[in-house]
Amino acid sequence: MNGRQGTARLAGFIYLIVVLCGTVYLQYVPSAIKLKGEPSIIIHHLTNAELLFKIGILCELICWVAFLILPIILYKLFKPVHDIAAKLMVVFAVVQVPISFINLLNKFAVLSLAGGATYLKVFPADHLSAQILFYLNLYQQGNFINQIFWGLWLYPSGYLVFKSGFLPKTLGILLMAGCVGYLLDFLGIFLFPGYDKTIISNYITLPASLGEIGICLWLMIIGIKDKQIPSLNLEQLSNEPQRY
Image (cartoon, one colour):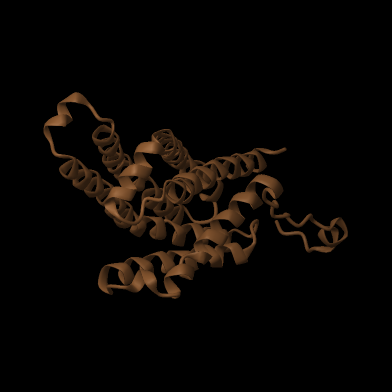
């Protein structure tokens, strides 16, 4: 396995960590704990599933540490394709990490409030419930802001995949479409009340999911195909006029 092939496989493996951990903390944990509905029900579910909530936090930490490493490895892979696009990809990706770590403080605040510490007993139960819901909502708003960069980093990534010649162009198109999908989804949620209940909101980010899962598996399992440099035909070379 040559160096570039090893870099591609490593990028695919780290991308897989990002995808799996992201799926756990963004989809599985919220749906398993049922963090929607009446405040009293949410607090009850959260209290009874504290360990699962902590597992979600741990997965998110692993996800963002891996995501800090991923664009650096991808930069090494794509730098020969287009250096400026590769640098933009790294910038749009890395900027998400500090935002996400700061946003995680909201989940730690929820743990503190739901933990039943002695110093919190001076507050009425309904006040604590309101605080927990406030921090859960604040966490969602932090993810909402970060969604801008979830989209932006996909466009240079998709462009590099499309122009690379060693990865399928279809995956590049899906990633670039995913960028547009994320940004439109952000605008839809921000500008139009009730947008999240429309059919389009369920599918507008689908190209991003397909593109990211696709590029992850392709890099890890198949790798990249090296561009073949045409070999010189000795007979043609001997017939070329000599220049001195």
